[in-house]
Image (cartoon, rainbow, N blue to C red; front, side):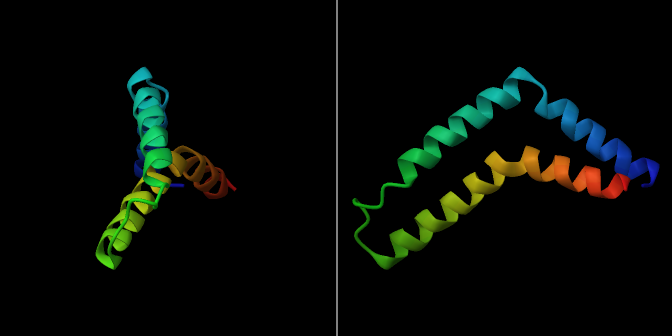
Amino acid sequence: MNKELEKYYEERFSMMASEGWKHLIEDAQIMKENYSNIASINTAEELHFRKGQLDILDWLTSLKTISEATFEELQE
């Protein structure tokens, strides 16, 4: 792995170790739970918008796990 990519991951992991990151993920998980209830959705447009919101929240809440797995693969 080149030094620039290694630095990228080191900085990402440093950010993810912070208290601010932990609070952000806690908030995102609460939002994800709230947005998972689709009973109040009345139109297809609202459903598609909600799906987009959930996709982004899924990405954000899984970013640490995905980053760790990718970093390990790059080290091999």
